[in-house]
Length: 165
Image 1 (cartoon, rainbow, N blue to C red):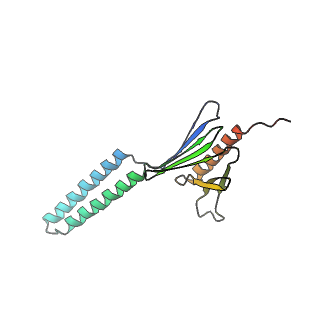
Image 2 (cartoon, rainbow, N blue to C red):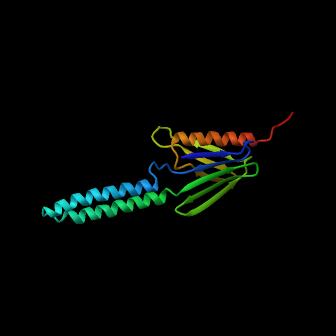
Image 3 (cartoon, rainbow, N blue to C red):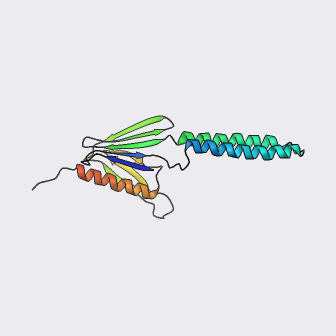
């Protein structure tokens, strides 16, 4: 998911990139509780009919499902921000609570959007300058990466000084 925030002059922009999660935290909890209640109700019925081995398997299944929801919730907190202004272009990435930061000069940075020869693999968007390169937008769809690339190029074009003859 791509969110763009720019000031009125367009000389300072912030791009916030997050993985797309259609179900929020509260929704995940409610869904998990409903699945648990239905599964345990069915397992209790089987247990009362004498098939007691179903109950431990259902409980194990609920533990695994709960663990999966926990990992998805933890990953939903990851983000990238790209700050662009006249002085710098800064990329900040937080993955699993580890924050990394890269800074580039807006005048020298190159925005590279690479697509595969066969339309099988996703595109790769990276920023390069003076031997440094960082891939951005890995959590975005191809269309969102193209939109981000266009927005960054437009932002850099606005920041470039106008040459007078």
